[in-house]
Image 1 (cartoon, helix red, strand yellow):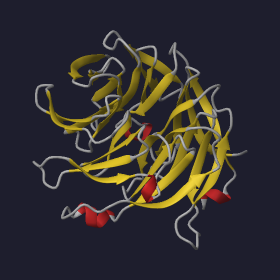
Image 2 (cartoon, rainbow, N blue to C red; image 1 turned 60 degrees about the vertical axis):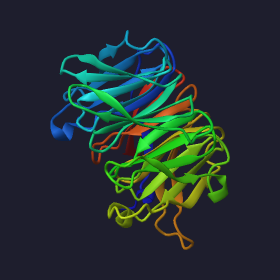
Image 3 (tube, rainbow, N blue to C red; image 1 turned 135 degrees about the vertical axis):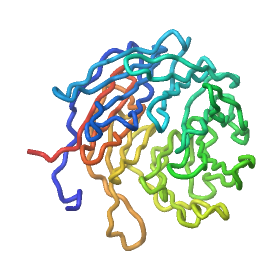
Image 4 (cartoon, rainbow, N blue to C red; image 1 turned 180 degrees about the vertical axis):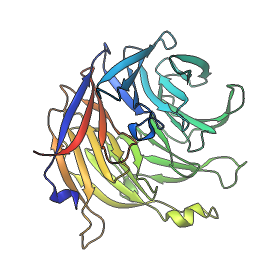
Length: 351
């Protein structure tokens, strides 16, 4: 049945308390879900300089903090990301470093600290194979790190075409194509024509080609990787598309083009957007609200998205991050806020 035909609501499952400052980001471990027989694990990072690892009990389904990663970063931890294997967690900090933590089952150990950015590191992202790690910073640069044996990381590229603070980096879900978004109002696409070649900026999505008119905060892809959603200080969400089959053939770079713009749904800056595996886009904003959108499937004039549901006052302050769980069907959503809370939500049919 079409989701729009169901009477759905976003139900708060649990509030995760423990951080003593704003929570900037959350990340689901990619290999933990009840379907796999492994308890779901969520990481959260905060202005309190720590990362918290939360785990859901398979019996009670309640969430508890299993460990706190501290004493490595001396300032705000702005972003965290799990490697595809789920064994490593990368943390980006305002202290100018990126930490690499290894999960040893009952505890975590910081096995590497990546240095090089001149100041605050804002975001970190692993590629699909776990062979590359990307970071970005207020120093306007994007770094690509090659993952070597023995917990070694080598800088493979420093990309310096943004003219302002770079807010987020995100690898494409199936290809080694890197995307970055910035305070300079643009999204840049970085690609290497061959495996050993250098990454170069092959496309800039800006206001001149239907892009955003203000700071771009986040990037997310749908499951197949042929569409991308971006969100901005201009209070819009934009959907972009590409010919994924041509792109995956590897012969040439295939540009992304603007498909549609979602506006009028948030009153303030949209800080986060995330695309679920079953094609629901979540957004979180400075108006303390969360919105969910789905493809209308019936637009005569091309692609369009409908508002599936809205949750006003989802938090008591700005919603900095929304992230869907990887599990199929359960539709869990985690959110992080300036109110110091992490919340777990579920899309459910109204009774």
